[in-house]
Image 1 (cartoon, one colour):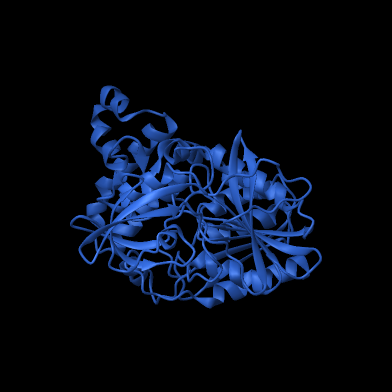
Image 2 (cartoon, rainbow, N blue to C red):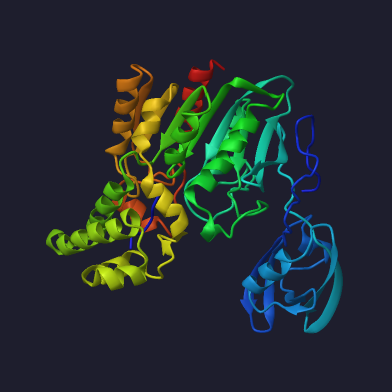
Length: 435
């Protein structure tokens, strides 16, 4: 399998829905499973755990009368409680069992010296979708950066003070007076819809579509100065939106423009080679993955159907989708839509300024797609696109020396973000918005 593919109240004004999307509960503590419950390693001020006056080294044994043997237990119990409600918490402190009344609270609002965060929502396909909007505290209309994140079931709610790539990028734009907008995908965090495994490609894209339309309606946003930044899978979804909704510019990083069949076949060779596999050993696996992708995504067959109709390729298909439900950790409904798209057609159709960026040490995306994007756009709209390669940068925006180093540190972390990425994106956005 491929290593990686690609708080309190809500702000309301005219035009925003009167039925706000509620915030999900947040425990607000570091926890580790030990014998008898969950040991507290950190307590965040203002969170649910703080309302119980928990301390480091306390052991949480139950929440709302239900045992908490694992972090998963606590997460599931907490998810069934309503923000703002009261509940009970049992814990051990210095060997003595104690009970506390607690208030179920959401994650704290992210408000900085120069910005405030608005917890807004849009309706997409009948479901309410959370959007996080940071707004400069200065008056007037501002340019805006609309972020479309990569693939996966990870919440996009993070403070602008975080050291994550998205947090750093949003902070760089916020510091220059931009509104920033992020979207919580259907079925994740506060957003309705899902479960996430059942969300298809069109449903995810529509959540971003509705959020982009709303971004342009805010009275503090200059609708002529909205840019999109699409990372990884977001770089596939971004041109779909930009081909429908006028924006001042679209920047992408670490993405794909060829068919996803081409990309995945390449990855099944490229990543094992980077890991030391002998070239001749990959010949059979490449033939297998080509057949499997065709049967799964072109023919739309299940593992059982492949076993019945094409038994020769059953093992190959199972190697690609071992449980028959997921590919690279994401549900097949999403992937079937993703593989069906003609991404070049959206790039040809859009008429805006384009920046296609590739990190030279990216082992997840391939370089070939990025100059290709600029070429496709410039053939249709001469002079509108440019390609830039940033040295010592990987798929997660981190500074590394080689793709192999990026691969080795992918799960371990420990690498700092390359600030050249933020600098380039903000400079480009200022140019295309004339900000």
